[in-house]
Length: 122
Image (tube, helix red, strand yellow):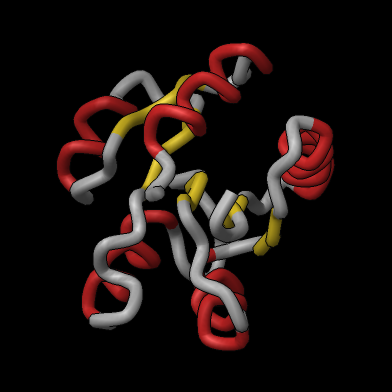
């Protein structure tokens, strides 16, 4: 694996569970509790993430706002984003923000790992 994954979700329990599953699968993982925090994490990171797993509904800065801000930064604009959301329109939202794919919450572990494997940047 060439870099970490960034998990962005305001639900601390869910975020920590996802991080644990991904670490157990051999990934390095960074976490953020909202879009603004995720931008700070990206700015401070010594290694660029290979994939962002992004919740859409968060306080402070939501997933769409984060995606727009991330795409404006040349160093980050080509990092793949995988949306995970409980929303019925997750596919549409993923397309609107230029995400590489989407997952519906609750996320099945095998589906998550398969999606991460398929969508992460090499």
